[in-house]
Length: 84
Image 1: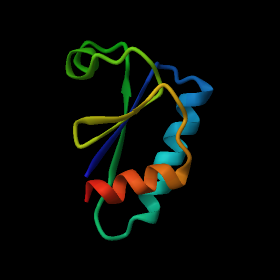
Image 2: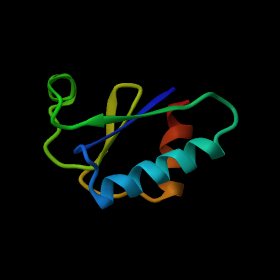
Image 3: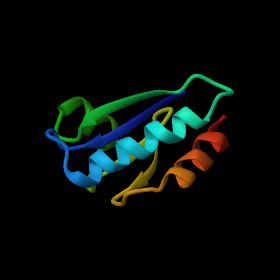
C-alpha cells in the first residue's frame, strides 16, 4: 500500500503533523507493508496527478482520501484498514 502526504516544500506545520500521524498509523498496521511518501503540491507531476488545491492532503493507493485538514492517527488508521 502506498500512502502519499501532499503539501508544500518546505512543509508547513499542518503538513508535518499530517505526515507524522500517517507514519504512526502505518506503524500500527502490521498486516501489510505501508509505504509513506511525501509529495510536493507544487510539483507538476503532483498537480497533473491530483490537482490538489488545499493542503495537507492524503492519498491512499492513488486516490485522495483527505484534503485541507490534519487527520488524527486513529482516523488515518481507519482509512488504511478500509483500503486493505
